[in-house]
Amino acid sequence: MHVVAVLAVDGVVGLELTIPCQVFGITPGYEVRVCAQRSAAATTAGREDFRVVSRYGLADAEDADTLVVPGADPGLPPNPRVLRLLRAAAARGARVAAICTGAFTLAAAGLLDGRRATTHWMLAGQLAESHPDVTVDPSVLFVDDGQILTSAGVAAGLDLCLHLVRRDRGAAVAAGTARQIVMPPQRSGGQAQFIEHPDPAGADAGDLAPTLRWMRENLTSPMTLADIAAEATMSTRTLSRRFRAQTGTTPSRWLLDHRLQRARELLETTDLAVERVARETGFGSAETLRVHFTEHVGTSPRAYRGTFRAEAARRVP
Image 1: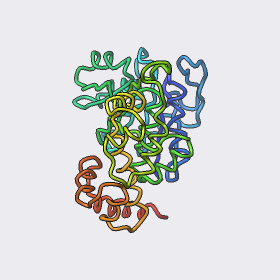
Image 2: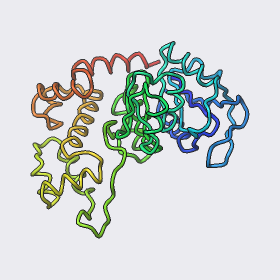
Image 3: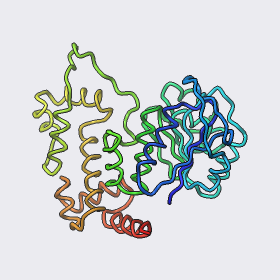
């Protein structure tokens, strides 16, 4: 059982506290512990003006496999016990993740020094100024730096937690969790934080939902930017502008992400040959799939299938 400790520190943002509890709580294979800064006592929770009481204290996070630090008031100095806990967790090899302004706590613990990280775009400048050894990227949804992960504000915490489930349990399980919480199964970490929603009366009015649905239903078919624009009945220039505004990414990157997502699911859940998986996901050939898979997933399709199935076998009681 993978233990996830969610730290309820003073000034914690309520929604960001509950996001990891929801995601990991409904996914098989996880035990979730909400560890209050003041053990078995009340924790004042930021602007929401409520108090959190948990049966777990900080000591109960000392053996956790993953520690999640939700956002909190960045103006409050981090508790020294929390900083010591995070340093000790990183030193023993535990995974540490921060949602939104939780990155300030990780930075105060020294865990982001020399690393790339993100936080809410409105506070990225403050994080960079107060912690100059951190490379702050204000434009992305989340940053996976291996053992240490950070995300942008609020909803990006969902993307980060689903990404962790995908890393641990595979794309199929992550997609199942996403369906339960009624969320798209994957938004890549490099997607833009700030997505513009144009005035419905303006030149960019319209909804790309039918076009996105058509793209998902036709992943196996060759698809150019001109093909997508024709389906959306607009010019390629207008499509690219509206696609970026409504999804935070380009049509080609959106299509690639969804094809890779489908390829991962097929590698995890079927015995289809890699060549067949490539055809079923629109890559055309095993070599093309291998190139994209290695670049974006970090391993080959065959190695991914072998590693995933070995890990799945170890998880079977």
